[in-house]
Amino acid sequence: MIRHLLDIEQLDRADMTTLLARAGELATGATCGRRAGTVANLFLEPSTRTRVSFQIAARRLGLDIINIEQQHSSASKGESLIDTARTLAAMGVRAIVLRHPDNFAASGLASALVDGDVGIVNAGDGQHAHPSQALLDAATLAHAGFEWSGLKLAFIGDIRHSRVARSDIALLSRLGAAEIRIAGPEEFMPDAGELPEAMRMSEIDAALDGVDAVICLRIQRERMAASGYPDGAAFHARWGLTAERLAAMPDHARFLHPGPVNRDVEIADALVDSPRSLILEQVRIGVHLRTALFEWLIDAA
Ligand code: CP
Image (tube, rainbow, N blue to C red; front, side, top):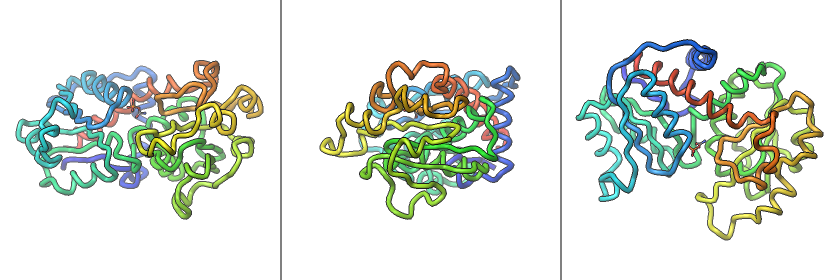
């Protein structure tokens, strides 16, 4: 059976446990056996971390990986996503890692494919979902020593446009996090009733009070009109992670950001590379998580 990874909601507890445990093993030096076949990165939106880490993960497993970008593909000549996917499948590609600007692009593609064509990995679709980012964020927290029961987390910033927040909250709530808070400018908060697992808060200092970890979110400029983009300095003053705010958090608390970071907007420049930052650890663990993901995907076929 060809597997897909389309969103967090499709994963049962066994899948979540398998993927996180395997990423943890790989992050602490476990080796992986080689797999055969070709996979494709089909990125119709920019990416550094996700695209490159899937590429490194595939090579580590002995898979061939090809990179396809919008401007160099027949998508720029109007070829549909389904036709592109079927073309790749006909060439023997076993899995397509898809980044796409539209919500539900990955699940739409998977349901349009004939079963057995090719596996689809959602590498971020619109503001809907980014499941491999959520898994790597959870793996990073676990590797840093956090346990789910009792864990208090806050998400700060542009929640409304963030596929990372949606997937992270879906995963962390399923894993048993004790408390998840969200806070940001009113125009960046999700619609009422969305993300019911999270507690909505209206001030950053209250949202950070007593949390074990904070996940700062990038302002998704590409998903809003230019007129909606806030002034960076004003955003930082009201919603940024500053040295003072970090000092007020518990000593053990850490901060994350899916990247790319706008320094001095979401996080003070001087903090980004500080010892309490898990940002580069997210990137490092991301390679291990995506290796585990390819194993999970390909070994099921
Ligand atoms: N976190 C994330 O998706 O980063 P990229 O856009 O660089 O892949």
